[in-house]
Image: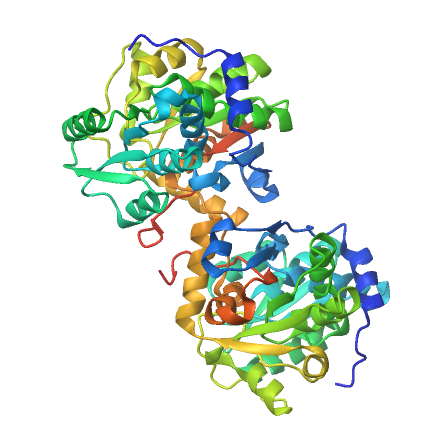
Length: 316
Length: 316
């Protein structure tokens, strides 16, 4: 629990370590969306990252940070989402095994992605307790290294590489906006932005219907996510002690958004930019839509975190 | 009817004329799709073109080719699709009026796009006769120049600029594949490819359920499209005398595809590349899926013609 807080040098090392494995994703703009919203938006397209999400950065850095001895029995995690696929691909690239504990209710699409990268899946009941106890069992049996999706020093460092690329390409942003779920991306982002561009504000976007990070940030006490109910299915998790500490200390603000604005933002990106982003990525644009005065005339960088959607279950 | 056939020099002039107005669209690849299909595919992403389709190239070239005297009363066309929006934007950029005849059954999305670019819409019954007679009336009243969506020398030259960019970026393709509807893009493409890369074959992809170009090409006689019924709603039109002549003389082959393969191809592009393409664009990948032996191990360039889809009416 008492983990070290990453410094920007650790993020630089992470970038060196993973840069030949990841995509340097493009930054796109949209004249149409800028005209509608009256500001200058820059989209960092992690939906084009390998496995379709920024999560590959963190998983890749964590896997390649392990010593040969640590890595020899493989890696393990519990996740029903992008971290599972990301860890599976990273392990495959290093030539080690990946063990993934997934709820038996996981979607077929996600199961196919994870097995497609060669990971071994153990199914469990869809509760946090079942996930954790099943993972414990898997780790005991295999001696694999547990790679937590965000409460992990090297995962946070990997996620911080996205805004390193972003600020090197677009240097003078007024804001960088990321979604917040467990806080790994937000933590890595704020460490990078503080180092490279001290005057740029870092703001997190969170669904009102899963506002545990907002409540934790505002109250100063780590509040868990209880029965979150949002279309942004990548943002259901709670902050961890490590990410909460970083966020509490460094982030400028967390802003919550309504479900209908998330869907409107997602649709705006699909229709105007002809690119596919998942609801969890669209929360960033949603806070700009809901807070026009704050962002008017500003240069705003949005991290579009992923593009993995179930095409058979779209909100439009 | 007896129009001149464009030469590659005309396409070079078109590119000079429009290059500051159009996007030079990116060429993307997909390791995943290449592995599945066993060939080396390059996607020229005209879904990222202005108005979301290659049609802007042709409309823009036609509008800016007019003398000031020809342009002074504006331009007119009949179209329910991408050409209408493309002509409207091109006219707006030149500062002249655009008159568009659209069937009264046109989708709201399309009407909003066309009016959004400032064009004046005249509605008509959804028949070819009504379209043509209404257009005649509009042209008589306004003295606007009629810009046909494809039976037009300068429109064909504009469409040919897409493969100029494509081959300059990816020089040694075995095939260039385009969809065929009215044949404007296919005509411009084959003229460019013959000039720049004589050994590259030019193949057109057409829905089996709208196979008038295939039947015309195989029989040597211009056959009209009768009751086409395909999800590829940009490919419902028939070849014109001008496009048929060019295609008949120069194109290597036309290959038809089933509806289910079009949907499968569209979904493959959405899921693997996280970009939005319309069904009419996906027919290009569909012929590769249906003809694995022909394309195995080849370098194949596909023009992804557009990304305008009705998100409320998707085939998955």
